[in-house]
Image 1: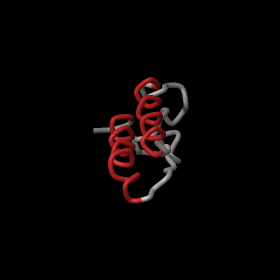
Image 2: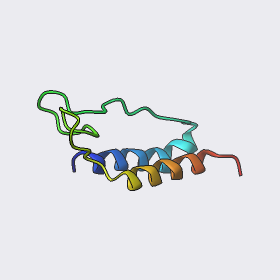
Image 3: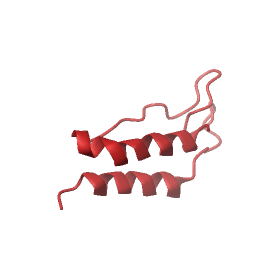
Image 4: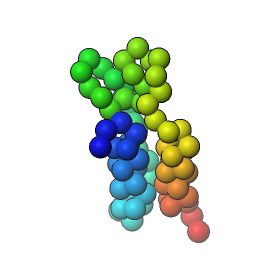
Length: 70
């Protein structure tokens, strides 16, 4: 898995396990690829967006809901 697939998988772990252990947030700081890396949200030159925004938004919103009070 690369790029957004990894980002979504990492956030799913936060959604599914983080809330129960008291984790309330996370930070994804690699917006673009740097040098030879391939897991940024955009290519190194920022010309190609490499994520499915709807999928990323959906998992982020699910994570927020999981941590919200009942």
